[in-house]
Image 1: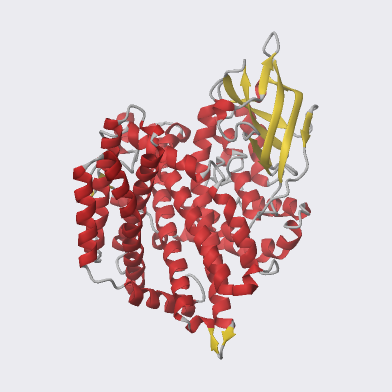
Image 2: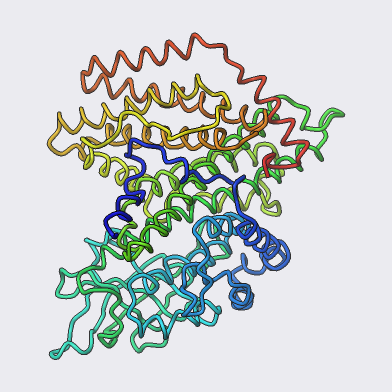
Length: 570
């Protein structure tokens, strides 16, 4: 019985040959319950968070306690917490919708994300029953706020390089922790901290350290570029003594906890970026219609329309892949439950998708808010305008939860590990034909090129991870393929996608091919691969031979943005 369920798990779904149609989730397919969670969160952000954001972003954090309590009473802090410990345990798709809406709450979304993510998930997935009973009900209710202490001045998020130590007493009943952490989210108002330290200098281990523990000190707030409404401080541990019962998971297994939790954190960041992208597009669309130049609204200017269309298309692509991944995560959750396997044990299997999501959505958001500032002109440079805040806030997403460079290493390294298993073709079980045949052929050829690039790089170099230009190309090609598949399958999954969605998919998929081909040619030249080079040239020739409708399509998309006064598929 267990074996059958294991076989059904979407393990390494990116590399699998079959695109499982049942696992393709799209925003259009949200259930009534999932939409209710999304609506509830949107209302909370608009009515309760937005009015106090000026105060919070001035680092007056008193409102945070009340907001967390209210979130707890609404069930929005217990997404991953089992019902027996006070949680709501909503499904991964509904949780994604919640995080998306919270992404429009600017820097408060960082505090919220840490509470429901890295600040509590180590206890949810790896804590003892006693730890769960002691902490989770209070976390779910908003009575305790959590924080996560991994990053260090000399190590960053590399847990293997962590210098914080934990020395055991002679009878191993007490551990003395000493060290320093930096850039720790929620630190000013957190009740407890998940601290990573090395036992015997070589066994990375996670501990729960309560705020009032002797020898534990929270430093001053950092002076940050953005997300000023989130708390970020250093932590100092000077012979902090905790009982062995404070250990989370197994001794020496801290790396597993850190990496597993980061996977979900990356998906969370991507979902939050979707929400912030929609907010930026709304602000840009409003300003473009209100601002008049030379007697006409900005929204009538074709170059402004081009920017609005680009913002909408990038948001559409981010949204498509984030919800697709949410569907795969939910399928994995259900399969793990049926098989009696802890979900934490299969989190690594989603690392490629989560890292790709984080890379793409964070970089798309950076371009979106940049366009948003440009649409606002001089007004966009003024701190009184929200688009300026979004611009500064967006920058951290390319650094959070492992920099995008580290995430590219994660994607490529995992693909190198499965070089022989990586499918060069992706076969769908079934689909409704809604066009995009030309774009589908581009997508399929890029997947073939990805498989060949991975195999050739692995075959030529003993340590392919050191060939960082090729590694970057592998990660970029994988990202392009995954986002194109997500966009294409969203159109196919929708019984009647409408001309607008099809136009957005066509524009994105064609632009994506144009961006990746030069990088693939560079890699083929470096590898001296005639086979790859011929495929790259053929794909470029095929694309060049087709009529380009991008200008026409972008104008239609921009019209929809202006008419909708924001993201046109909401």
